[in-house]
Length: 331
Ligand code: NAD
Image 1: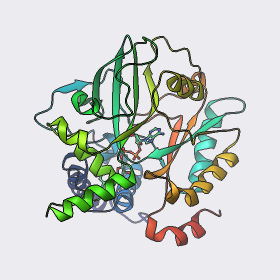
Image 2 (image 1 turned 135 degrees about the vertical axis):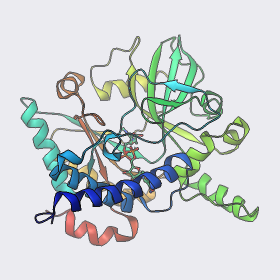
Image 3 (image 1 turned 120 degrees about the vertical axis):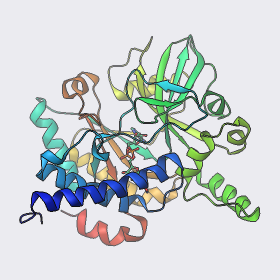
Image 4 (image 1 turned 90 degrees about the horizontal axis):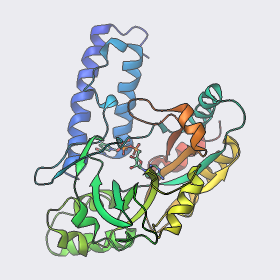
């Protein structure tokens, strides 16, 4: 495609793409009100990645490909994430998953065990517990600095204010709005002549990023937590063990997770959720595949934006789903 593309042509297209992506990110992350579908955003983003790969001199630190998330809203106290809250690399078809497996096998010896988790379509949050007590909750923000949403998170019933053991840990996951609550909320808003939310993800984000906690309290939000960033007294040596230990502390994790011994098994799990997705009471936009053992994760490390030991498989857009699946999945 870009064979005969000159540097100047690429530079111009990169500029156009960045301008668009920055505007869309602002609408999505700051306003919680996107104007385009996620898959359209992803297409533009991947075109930018393509051009930056072919013309590496065009990569700049402020490119959307080098940054995570959005910015912090005024009115909120800022929280600095000692360990950055990163994004994930994306896969869109089976080949991308096979490539991910190949990249890993080049860097680590022997068999690799994966854990598949649902990719919950909500807002990433980080919760800090001291001696078992919830002391702070923050949004991801730009990955390094987030918003202090402790008062709002306290209203979410699935979040324990006190753990079953007096542990000091930091744990991250997704705050989401169940599909039924989303439909109810939009119906009410419509009846009151208010703007409706584009999707449950934006409704959850808009609810948590309210200065008045009474609003979040009314919105029936829930959580699934999936990452331990400060282990405190926890002794897990794998993601599976970590999730089981969170369960024991009374923290809500998602139980659709599955250990897989090969990438083929991962692909079967992903394929199954193309169908099961619509039956779930909450929105998912893909499957996250992680290397299970922490010692292997450590060997693989991180890029600027994401861990090398995980990837997010994104489902095709709903309306194009059947056709895309037939073309892309059966490689
Ligand atoms: P991402 O959606 O590609 O995935 C990373 C995120 O997945 C993590 O940060 C985490 O919050 C979440 N996640 C959910 N379940 C998880 C699990 N089990 N384990 C680990 N993580 C899990 O990346 P992103 O940086 O959050 O967002 C980028 C995406 O947002 C884009 O690909 C696009 O789809 C969307 N977006 C849309 C617009 C728009 O205008 N429509 C604008 C900006 C971004």
